[in-house]
Every structure is written in C-alpha cells, then in structure tokens.
Image (cartoon, rainbow, N blue to C red; front, top):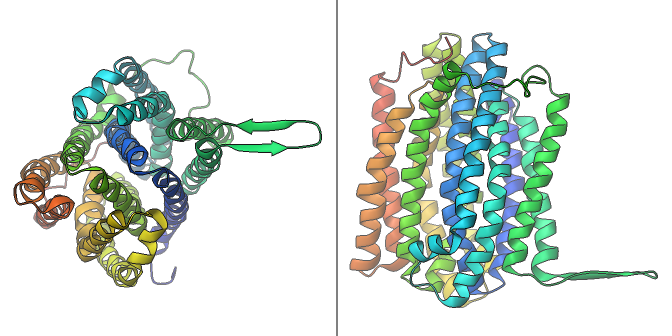
Length: 455
C-alpha cells in the first residue's frame, strides 16, 4: 500500500487512518452499548450529542486555524512562531470552552426545552443528565482538539493517534462499567458500581477526556520545541498571532456553526419523525463514520501538505497535492462502497435489535454507500483549500449548501412529501453534490492562491 501512495501522504495519513479506525470501531461499541438501552435512552444521547457537536465544532474550527498557521510556519522554517501560535490557540480556546461550559451547565433545562419542546419527561431527564456531563467535558475537549491541531500542523500525527485512541479506549471501558454496572468480589472486599445507564455514558466520557488531557500534558513535557515549555505565568495574548489564527478560525467557526447548527435543526426535524427514526439516524451516522475513516485521514493529510507547501511559497505543489488527494480519495471511497454494501444488514444487526430500526438504518447506510463517491470533493478538497488559507470560500459554500439544500430539502422531502428519515438524508446528499461542484470550480479557478498567513 505504501508503494502506491506518496511517502509524505502515507506518513501523515497512516497514523490518522489507524487512529480513526480504532476510534470509530471502539466508538461504535459505545454506540452499541447505548443503543441496547432502548430507543428513548439512545435518542436522548443522540439529541445531546447533536448539540455537543455544535459546541465542539467551535474548538475544531480554532484547531483548524492552528493546524494551518503551524503548518505554514513549519514549511517556512519559523518554528518559534509555530510555538507561539500553539500557546495562543490553547489559551484562547480554553477560555472559550470555560464560558460555553458554564452557560450550558447553568441553563441546561432551558436549552433542552428550546431545542426539543416535544420530548417526553423521561427523555428530558435523560438529556439533562447527559448534557451536564457533556458540559463538564468541553474544556477538556477544547484542550485536546487544539493540541492535536497543532501537532497535525507540525506533521506529528502519531501522537494525535495515541491520545485519541487512549480517550476512545477509556470511554468504552469506563462506559461499559458505568452504563451497565459491575461487581468485583474478592476474599477481602467487594467493589461495585451501580447501573447508571445514560448518566454512566456521560461520566465515562468526562473521565476519558480527563485521561486524554493528562496524557497530553505528559507528552507535552517530553515534546521538542514545538510546544511552549515555559512562559505561561507571563503569558500575554499576541494580537498578530491571534489574527493569523482567527483569519482561518473565524470563517471555519462560522462554517462549523452553520454546518452543525444546520444538523441540529435537521435533528429537530428527525425528532418529529419518532424515536425509531431518531435511533436509525444515530446508528446510521455511527456506521457512516466507519466508512468515512480513510477519507477523513486524507482530509487531515491534505491540510498539512497544502499548508506546508504554501508556507514554502510553492503554490503549484499545493495545487498538485490537492488534485492528487482527490484522485486517491475517489479510488478509496469507491472501493469502500463496493465492499461495504453487501455487509450492511449484518453490520446494522450489531447495533439494533428492533426490526423497524434495523430496516430504516439499513436503507440509510445503503444510501451512504451510493453517494460516498462525493466525499472527496465535499470534505477532502476543502481541507486542502483551508491549508492554503482559503477558509472564507469554504464557509460561504457550506452556508449555501446547508440552508438551501440540507435543511430546506430535508424538511420538504422528509415531512412535506412524507419520505421520512430517507428524505432527510437525500437532502444531505444533495448538499454534498452542490458543494462538490463549487469546490471543484474553486480549485480550477486558482482564486485560492495568494493567501499565505505565516509570512
């Protein structure tokens, strides 16, 4: 395999591929554990996760800014500036996370009533428990995402693989113990944990994130000059570095808010279709996450490769890298769709026991197989454009696709035409096709050039 892929791509993408495989497969075990609690508990977790995804997208957007700035600095030989960008990103991201966590914790019930007014009292209680735990993880999530963004920009995807794999492993092991409970009997004592169900899933996530941050701090002290080793007591915000970070981070944040906020609105539409549709939607996205692993690894590699090429001042190499990553992505996603399609019913049966949920989930996953060929142009290509500093175009494209197609068509197909959850997903795939066309036009036009940040 490594002989068929350019060495620099393999070096960046292989650890991400291993990481994503491990994270998504173990994450799927977590989804299976939650799904076997029943439709209402898994729907409650899925609803809160939809909101949490919006919040974490803010941190991910700033992490993208850190990745791009660090990659361009490293490409241009400016390692001290890269270290300063890392420090600025970590400090500003942590401050943002603390504010969001406090707001979500204080107004949890009001937020849930606003988002899901038709939820039953049982679901509301489940969602409240899980949201409080999720809010406590926000600062830990921000630190992890930002540190990983810096590491990816420097080309160190191996440490990112280690920390994310550790967090996922802890989440599954702790989740099993806290969701279902356990008792350990010895000759001297009995150790037991009660069955906490939804609350246990939330606590497991918080403990896993805490373990990841502790590991990062340990690795931080052992890393080279990339991460700042001292100076936190005299830390001051640097407006020049922050401007570079947020010139990517703000458009990426707006884009993520539009994208994940739109997904949250779509989740409200899905809620109106009933708990079976909600459960099918949650499980199908979990399975689709596994199918998207190779594409996601190429997306991460694309940002770093293009960013470092632009940092060197070689935009022709950046363009060549984006075209190469597209061709590679098309080959990989086509192979995945062909192999995965006949396995769909078997895979779905691992997640769901109810026949109605199994049927709807299978249809959604088959649709994902059919449209997976559009994944490279929808997700890999824009990451390359961001690496070149062209984040604003990705923001505008996402807003257009989300508002006009995913939300509007999802509502029309899903509710007005009565196609249900299948109609909602068809709206999503229409959004994919629109954005693919616009990103291909942007690459061919050359208007992404001349946006170097690290000079």
